[in-house]
Length: 515
Ligand code: KIV
Ligand code: ZN
Image 1 (tube, protein in one colour):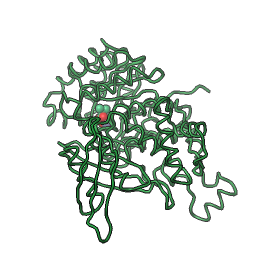
Image 2 (tube, rainbow, N blue to C red; image 1 turned 135 degrees about the vertical axis):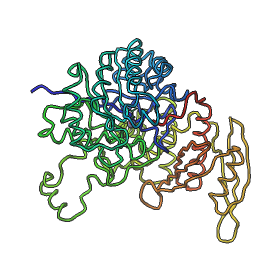
Image 3 (tube, rainbow, N blue to C red; image 1 turned 90 degrees about the horizontal axis):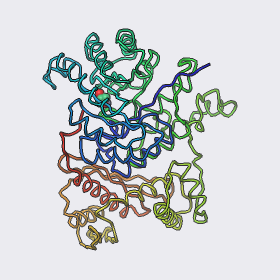
Image 4 (tube, protein in one colour; image 1 turned 180 degrees about the vertical axis):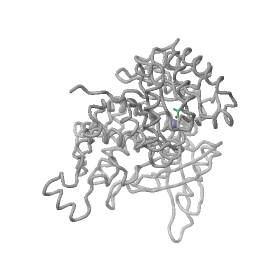
C-alpha cells in the first residue's frame, strides 16, 4: 500500500520564538535547528529575515548549514521583505520563501487599509517576485478562517497562477472549529484552480485549545502540510503541537489511513527537552506525549492492568518517542564515553571545546552530587551553551546572610573581559547579589520574575534559577544551574543580561515582528 506524505513544517524558530520569553540567540537557534533536522522535519521556518539583523543572521546560518531539511524564511508581501528573505537563503541547499498577507475583511479594513483588489495584486506580485529567487514559494492568507471563502478562492487562484507551490490556510487567531476547518479545506481543494498541483497547508493557533484537533481535521480533508511547533510554543496560547499531531497520525493509522510523516519519532523527547532547556520553559506535567506524567500510571487499577498487559491502558510507548529511562546513573566514575553516549541520547552533539567544557562541568558536579540525572546533564549543556557570545561572566561571589547579619554580597564579574568587583546590601542574599551585578553591568533592565526549581530530587539537588528581565519592551529569560542556589541565581541574572546585550547589538530595521 503506497503512503501519502504529510509534510511537517516546523515554525518553532519563527512563530514559536515570537512568544514572550521564548527568544533564542544564534547559537541556541542553530543547536535546535540541528536537532530538528535529526528529528526529520521537512521544512524549518528559521525566522523572519527583515525583522532584525539577528533574525537575518539566524536564517542565514541555518540555511548555510542544513542539507537534508528545507529552510524557509518568512516575508510580508513587500518587495524589501522578499529581497531580504532571498538574501538570507542565498546559500541554502533547499530554500523556501514564505510570503503572506491578510485576507479577511477585518484585517483589510482595520490593519492594511487596502481593498480586496489591491490585496490580490499584491499576492500575485509578491509570489512572482519570490519565484524569481527560489523555486519553492509558499503563500499564506493570514486570518484565512475569518476570510470570505469566495474571496479566498480568488486569492489562492492568484497565488498559484503566480507560482506558489504551497497554499497555507492559517487560523491566525485560533477561531475555527474542526468540522468548519475541514469544510474550508475541502472547498478550497475543489474550487481553487490548480489545487491538485499544490500542497494545502494548515497553520493553527490554540486560543480555544483546538489547534491540534483543527490541524488533524484538516489532514482528513486533504491538507498535506501541518505547520507546528515543538511543545506547542507560540503566540498567545501557542501553535499546533508537533509531537501531538505526529503521534496521533502514527497511533491512529485506522483513522488517517496511508498518511505518514517523515518524522523519526524516537527523537521527539530529546527535541522537546532541548527546547525546554534552551528557553527555560518547562512543559506542563500533564502535557500529552512529552509531559512528565504522560506515561505515569498512578491509579492502582491502571498499574495492575499495565503490569498484566500494557495494551490495557497504554496506547503508545515511551520508547516510541525516545524517552530514556530516568534512573540513569552517571556519577564521578563515569568517563567521557558514557557522558558522550548520554549526551547523544538526549539529542546533544558536542564536539571539541564545547564537549570539553560540558564534560568538566559534569565532573565538577559529580564531585558534589552522587547521582547525575538527565535533567542535570541538560542543565549543564544549557549552561555551557550560554557561555557563548557573552559580555558578562560571573567570576566569584560571596555572601553574608542569616538571622543576625544584614544580607550583603561581594561579586566579581568579567565585563567585556575586564575584571570588576562590587559590594552591595539587600533585603536578602539574592537581592544583594543582584544589586551588585546591576551596578557592575550598569543595566537599566527591570527584574520581572525570579523562579527557583530543584532540577532533580534529594538534598544535593542541582538548583535551577530562571530570571525574567525586561528593557525597552523586550523580555528575556536567563537560566543558571548550580548546587548553590545563590550562585545559580547570579548566573541566571547574568545570562539574562547577556541575552539583552545580544539583542541590543541587533539593529532592528523593521517594525516589531508581531504578526
Ligand atoms: O498565524 C499566522 O497567520 C502566521 C502566518 C505568518 C502564517 O503565523
Ligand atoms: Zn502563526
